[in-house]
Structures are given as C-alpha cells and as structure tokens.
Length: 444
Image (tube, rainbow, N blue to C red; front, side, top):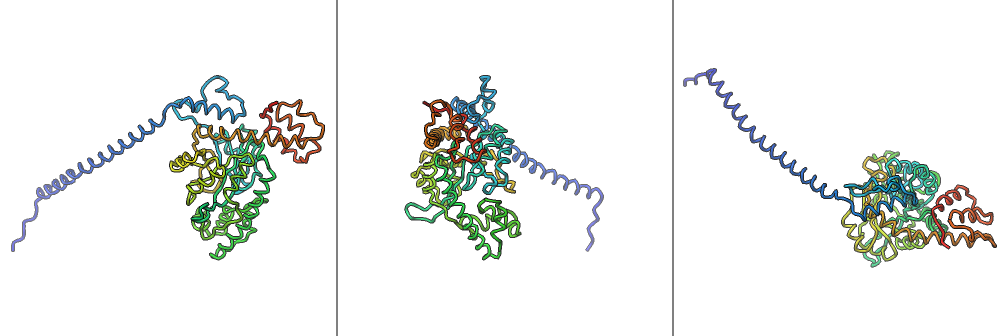
C-alpha cells in the first residue's frame, strides 16, 4: 500500500494557522464571560454603595440632642469645646451620631489580662468616653479604675457581672448559667455590705467549681493542680474558666484558649462544672434592691433566651445586650421590644491572646440607646445616692449641725466620712468618694 505523501511546509503552516484560529475563536468566549463577571461585580458594588448611602442619613434633632446630653453627662456637666462655642458635636454631620461607650469589660481583678488602670488607658486610646468595669463577681477594681480615669477624662460606671443559674419556672427544660450585669451610680450600691456578702459567696463557689473542672479534666487524662490555676488567676482572685483554660494551654493540652473552650469548657462541655451560683431571679432582685441597673449579658449564648428573658423581666430586669462588635442582633432586639427592655451592648473585653476578640469600645452603640440607658439609670442611681447619704447622716456624731450648712454631697462627705466616730480607715477610698460626690447637689 503506497504511503501518503509527506506534508509540505505550506500544509504544516496551514495547520498551524487553523490551530491559531481555534484559539482566537475560543478566546472571545472567555473574554465575554470575564466581562460579564466584572459587570455583575460592578453592579453589586454599586448596590452596596447605594444601600450604604441610604443608611448614611442626616442625624435627627433627637439624635443630636441625645449626643449632647450623653457627652455632657460623660464630662460631669462640663461643656466641651464644641458645645461652649455653640457648635455641633463633631460626631454629627451626615453620619449617625456616636459616642464611644464601653459597658462590658474585664480586668485582672477577675479574668482579664489588663489591670483596671491599664484597661482605662487602653479605653482612652480607643476614644472611649464612658467605661463600665464589669469584672466577674467582684467590684475590687473599681477604685483603681476611677483613679486612673481622672488622668484622661473618662467617666467610670461601677459595675459587676454576676454569675447565676436559671431554672425554668414551668419546670420544663434544663438549668443553664446566666450572667447579670449590674451598673451602679458614682457611689456604688446602696447596700454595699449586702452585695459584698452575696458576691463573696459566689467567689467561694468558684474554687469549688475549679476543683470540679480539674477533676473532669483529670478523668480525660489532662491532670492539673488547683495551685497552678490559682497562680494564673493571681492573688485574691477567684479562679474561673478562663484561668483553667490558660492552665491547659501552659500544660500543652490545647493549642489556645479558644480550643480549650470549644472542646472542653463550654457550657455543658465534658469539663464544665458549676459552683454555688444563685438563681438568676434573686440576682436581679438584689441588683434592683441595691440601686443598680440589671442587664442580661450575652443572651445569644442561651439555649432558651425567650423563657430566660421573660422570667428575669418579671423579677425586675431592666435590659439585655443586643449590640455586639458585628452589629445588632435583630431577633434579640425584637425580644427587647416585646418585653419593654433597654437595648445595650459591650465588647466583653478580656485582653485574651486572640486576634478575633473585639477591642474595648469596638461596639457601635447608637447614641439613642446610650441616652435611653442613662435616662433609665439616673433616677435609680439618684435614689441610691439619697439612701447612701441618709445612712451617712444617721451615723453622724450626735449634735452635729453639718446638714444646716452644706449644699453639696462633697461637703457632706468631708463632714461625715472623715469623722472619727465613723469606721472609715481607707484614706484612698475617702478621696475617691470626695471626688465622685463633687457633682451631686443636695436639695433642701
């Protein structure tokens, strides 16, 4: 059979040209697809821009008034430069008014990594004007925070996050832990001894709880000593889950704190344990009885938030956390509306070695939410202040005529707290009270 003739050079060139044409013909399809993708992406960007533009409306008169009110309260009644000049606060304009307020943060007095003073300084660097120190089951860090705040014009709200346990009122469902944020006026709780005893009992239970967690971890082949956990917690600090998690990291059982919680220490986890936490309703009632504002912390972590919120509201709950660093949770916002509760939020800053942890002041609280919180809180704090001052005058030396010639609470503090008949030995505490009382004016 004769062999086919070899392809000439001209035939080979034709084949190459055809192949090139095939490539060129295919290319326009790819280009068209790419163009379409780019066009769709441009449309998406345009829609996002238009949506964002719609949100950036001019602030209402109510929002501007609320901003001025909040700033004036944060400055203890002193007008800022823009107010003294009759100008708008700088946060207005075409943007929604905002003032940086942090209502949920922790220090080394519980399970945070920064001292109260260092926390205040960090908040100041982040532009925070109002800071609530809310350590777990203790208010020991509040005096240091107040002292540090004097250097940077931050207003401190004395607070505490109280551990509790919720049991369904209808008996259906399991118990679950809840945390109640308590916010007090400048003088703190109206009945400090009662609150101290209450918190002390919870802190004692934290040691029992830590032992329970360590026993469970030992059964999981992760033995650790309570002394090591207490060393991490620090002198006089009751150990918590975070301290156990840090001990697990140091022992090499987990890579980081987040892994310790996600695998072992989460609520109901294999190494989770409880102490002697009181009922959530009793905590709310105690906070209210002591002149505080009671707010349910991180309700999004609850298994049955509707039942918890309903029962705690009946006990006197004032609000719930709705705002987080990633925005407002619409479902919880609706629940707050349903039960007539305040809507607040905070970063829950601990200073963990975690890049994903929200920083102090990172939660964008609407100024109307802050103003609403203060509108509800100030009458409560005012009544607590009157109760505190009434208790002071009852303990005053017999025959004292001080009340006839005082017109400010600071003067009354000088007359009463420095009396040799009163059991006040901490001069630092007296100095803090004098400063905090300076903006309280007494009526006749």
